[in-house]
Image: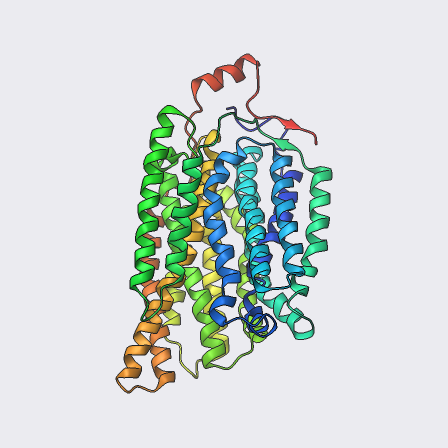
Length: 494
């Protein structure tokens, strides 16, 4: 494959295709967190238990984990417009089904369909960005992407809290539907095809192994709780075993056919370091996102809307800093951002270990903003360094691996902090400690475990280079490009 196509902009303007994909990704990611505050309403309206109602979020995460491993193969074999059409079409169908769901089972099916469309959008955005944006501009453009994908999860609970104050949970889907429809229409009018399609049949066994393996791993991790360890542990073990079989099959297909997920990306050390750093940082972030609402609502008595408003500034700060972080990365490289950012994450989590019933809200707000700003300083450079170290023909596989491990890290982070918190608080209550004090101690310990894990992030940050350079593409592709027979990357007007 060739370098950046000549038709792509080399100035300071973000390519139109990227802006369209960022807009679509913002809409689908916003939907991922918009149901968090709706659990009590679902329990009353659809007559389900809290554990069942939680499946509207769990099923979404499971579907993402099962589908994303196949997106690397998929994005290499369809045009950008077709991938976009399929992703947004599936998302719209799931949204419409969820809005009119007469029973909980139908709502659950709608959420699964939604997740199927969402799973394609993030790898599509990242792969396209790495293909059309010149290396010297990637930090700036990736910073703009960070703005969208950081603000959306932060805004989801706040917007849902506002809607649920005056309307039914169905309006969470009804309001998203026309917005997603307008974004889809705009994208199909302006979107261009990027890159060159490849050929090769899909390996059905790999699809099944990835779906069941990663799905089982995420499901098992999501089931961990105090007093219920053996069953989830067995499911996690089964998932890991299936993932091992999946990996062995991909290594074999790399020699004899077309792998579903090309594991040669893991041989590139900069990408692997970025992958580890991102996964652990995401784990720590998701753990705190679970613990903080539990603390604020269950112990401090805040409403879901008040909780959302308190954590919203951190999410907004993370997103709004994205473009600035990107420009700094383009100018100075990654280390001057990632190392301080990783230290900030560890310090904020260490600060959360001091929570109490009297800790001022401004301190909580400050710690949360510190963590989100630190993550902003780390995520944009890490994404850019990691994917930038890959040859162009592996961008889609690298994006797919990043997306898959994000889902696994989210499930593992949730399982870890909930298990640590509940085990510690249960133990203290049995010893005669006041329940409120016991829960505070359990949350403090869980934050402490996350802070220790954040030390690994600092180590990986130190090991990362300031710049990454992709290895040369295969000689055959370079020769074809040099002879002008068939350019590897082209822009085709839609």
